[in-house]
Length: 601
Image (cartoon, rainbow, N blue to C red):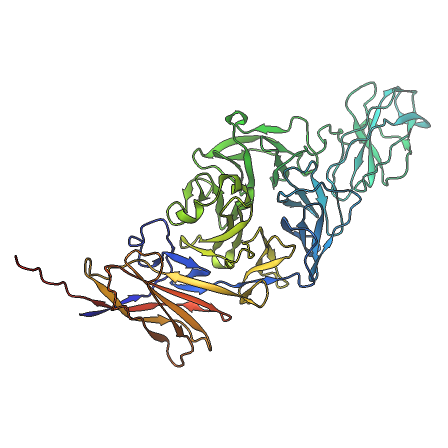
């Protein structure tokens, strides 16, 4: 019975659950939970730390957004079923508004332009404008009443017929409405000026100015800026004495309200691009709340597929439909071309689409994750995550939500595994090493995977990942300084199981004698060692061993399986403790039984 030693000093290949357990690479795992590859070793993930320690919000949190104002202040905004809120110390407080939100369960889609955040969601009629203290309906409806123009006495205007209109305006952002109805004609004599009256005020608190526009002498239909009323309560303007040479730009008729029934949106090239699932709308340049009636781009509307995602990716705007991936490029501020990135790989979830280090990631057709550099599309999960991803129902695909951990080069996605509507598991992809792993949070039915993930920054401007879990709380996800999930009682169970190996002796029966593990000492902690025979999915032998071993980098553990030799052997390690741990290397002592001689006949 010769004894052989086998070193496994590279554990960084990640999970491969789609190939036969005896066919994967030596550095890959057939089961990997709550351990992530870091170089050549495995590191247990951080815990899920509760941030809202003063109590949960009274609504489920369907989304979060990191809102940064120009003064440097950060606010974590939240979207609930029927209201918006913000993280306020250790709790979530409501954002007040005089308006109401119809209750809904779809995730809010957030974006920011200048010092305002915007929120919309499928099933919500209007897009909302949000700041750190309140929210309103986005856009400004045009005035409904035309002004009155009258002879204002001696001035410099020429004798002619004149018409006037006015708009609602916000002087902080430059947002402007479409013009009011035109005034009645004013037949003005020579060397006169004009007085304006009956200029309507707005009930929209965003309006702080009215801008006045007048025709050129004896012209109709085109109006040029002549002055403003710099408040929202005065109704008159006197001494309009602006000659042709001093008149400003023409009024725009493309400052209509944002389309209703939008599903998702993104800012790109200083415009807002938004979709109702069928068409792509774009706002006026520098005016994300203003839309022209004809500012629509059709993205193959007759193919029967929905637009599920819009994402600004460098010099192009990615438009993900459920059958194909397209993108926009623009030669100038108002000319856009539609090109196809992939005619085989669609997108199923806006919330799954993230970019990092020149790469774009998303969850798409065929129960797969994809990545692209903007030119080519690659399937990154086809084989390695097959078993897990095949459990995602097509009807739940839009619930896949993702985040990025740049310090670890990780794309993290929470996914459903059944039709309940909850996310149950987290899959983690290292986009530098092409390695996968999985995270979970217990198996008693109450510890869901994240419903939502959001990139944020701590007080030191370091990147952190925040999450919600269907309970009104906000958490820091995979916090390296936290060793528990959801408080101080739920330990993180981490597990690795290697491949089924013949250890260089195919067709021979063999057994484990010892397993040596390069694991740092953890006082008072234990691990569970397992041995799997042939291609069994459950261990045939387990034992508990201490990690509290001083002065030993390599820890030797007896793993005697000589009473049940097998052609293939597979080892496993499980750890559940309050102290972080890493597995830096393994060494297996394997005994090989000599082949029995063939009996003579």
